[in-house]
Image (tube, rainbow, N blue to C red; front, side, top):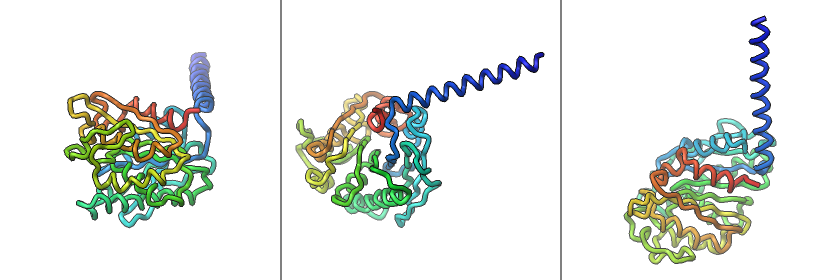
Length: 284
């Protein structure tokens, strides 16, 4: 008798769990676009796929995807995957892991370094495209990853796949904290009063940025008087607007404040950033 009661309880719990999973899946289908478009995450300086993983796992918990794969890029630019993207996978995520995560051969020459980093992004995109006929891609960058993405777009204008969404997190388009250009004021269009060489190199984005791409620019302000996330001044991030907003399908900014606005915390268990990213990329 006791055994039957225990078995009945177990079956009931499993049934409730299955119903909960089913309900969660129904909610995901209802609220998120169900497409095969892959989203490619590119990490920042000195980092790895681990900087992307918390955001990717948040998307998985939300029910928008079941698929996360890792693309390792060696120092020669060769891309290998820990597994293939399953055929028909819904909203798959690709976490890029760069072995050359400091662009070590280009120290002191940011422009050449970012052009080189752009080839890593291109190689990943090409390798992803070989896995299936994807209708488009999404791109998400943090810190230096944003510059590699920006140079990839600029260097390959006219030969890009369709890019539905671009999410820039803590991008330093006009320099880092301590550089006078990065601290300089920007006008309502995002044009900085003083431009650094990298920003000037990207000015052609005003003519080449894809018109089908929606952009979300996320940056942090510690509210400690630095007007920065500790590494990137707010104004340097906001200068992205001048580079792309006049051509982008849409352009939005999200300013994160307080201790969770610190440069690394913007991608590390940051619910505000996670929720904004998930809604922007996949919400119906």
